[in-house]
Amino acid sequence: MVLSDQDIVRYLEMEKIRITPPPDFTKRLGSCSIDFRLGNIFLVFEHSKYPYIDLRSEIDTRDLMRKVEVPEGEGFTMQPGEFVLAATLETLELADDVMGRLEGRSSLGRLGIIVHSTSGVFDPGWMGTATLELGNLGRMPVKLYPGMPICAFTFEQLSSPAQTPYRKKPGNKYAGQIEPEASRFRADFHASTKKRED
Image 1 (spheres, rainbow, N blue to C red):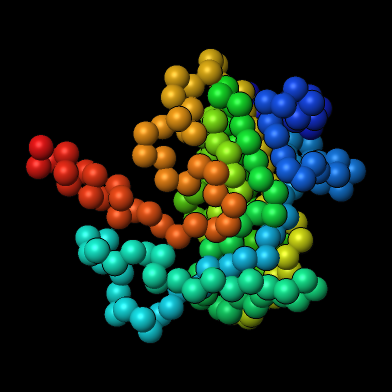
Image 2: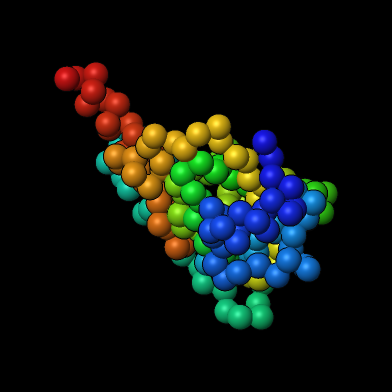
């Protein structure tokens, strides 16, 4: 069941959904979603540092990216074809029986800006900021400003609480993040390889 606007408010009051800082409902609450804003930290790929990304190598994917902190009042220009990681300004915490979905904004999509490619689902028990997979599919540069609405979250009630919520999963990689996080795929790859060897 997708939560309506009044259910989102009720879940926030019950603290089954926590958003910090608290949202302004008059500006950010939709009929079944709530807007989140863009933070000021971006991770940009260093294209010339390595010739390619090898998921089996010992290279830490965080070494492939450079952190850019945008000063207050300034913007970040997304070039055509560029892909960067950013994060929401707000942190989100979900109860063990609520899941969230990150949705792109149509007004940005019409300019060629996508905000996530695959990371749309936020498991029950999630806590932290949401990493955004920003891409410019258009042919013109687009300037994004920290603090602007960048995405929306919808929420769904589970039939029962998750037996193992995200924050309690062994080896969860992103719980509690406060900035955009580079891929930690290498940990998954090496864990699956070790299981096969055992």
